[in-house]
Image (tube, rainbow, N blue to C red; front, top):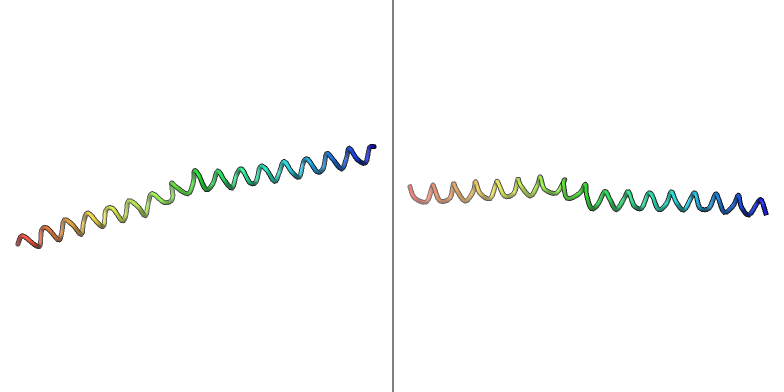
Length: 61
C-alpha cells in the first residue's frame, strides 16, 4: 500500500507540473504576445501615415 501511495504522490506531482507548464505557456500566448505584436502594428500605422502625408504633400506641389 505504501508503494501505491508513493506512486500516486509522484504521479500527481508530475501532473501538477505539466498543468503548471501548460498554464504558463497559455499565459505567454495570451498576455505577452499581444504586447509584442503591438510594436510592428504601431510601426506599420506610422509608416502608412507618413507615406499618406508625403503623398498628399507632394501631390499638391
